[in-house]
Length: 204
Image (cartoon, rainbow, N blue to C red):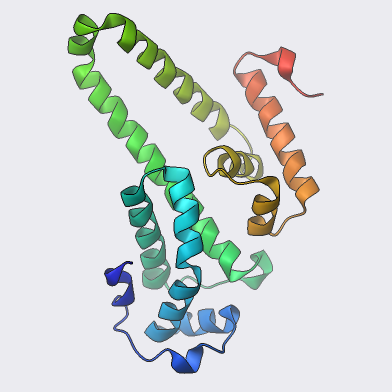
């Protein structure tokens, strides 16, 4: 899918590497083995794209996110730490973070476009643009509330609501018990409701 990724390290034979575990391949990637990087990419690119697409909802943007994530992995020679979970969990975590960055950049860009075109649009269709402004303002408030949460709580909420993932899928990705994921979700949502001025719905 992404030719630039396949040629990032210069290529090479991958047949001898197919039998190696992901952890062994990452050790080779750290030593600049381009063929090992290609095997890692082949094994995890589909899952990475699936996550990015669910979060970004645009194929082109999702492709850019995955390419950026894998290229950063190769160029930085990031050392994989097995104590933090499987290689797939680690790769998907990078893709998740890149997706959030991409969504934030898009939100900033969209706000700029709305600012430039806002006056003209309000003169033409004030009711429609008022509703659109309210929707965008609500989204901004939600994002602000989300950013105030501890990282472990904001991450599960982002994966569920932006990534469309179930509790089980999130638990698998983060290598964390489902009960812990549900607890983080409940606490995070309770704090967000309080921040958004809706204490009546806060779960005790």
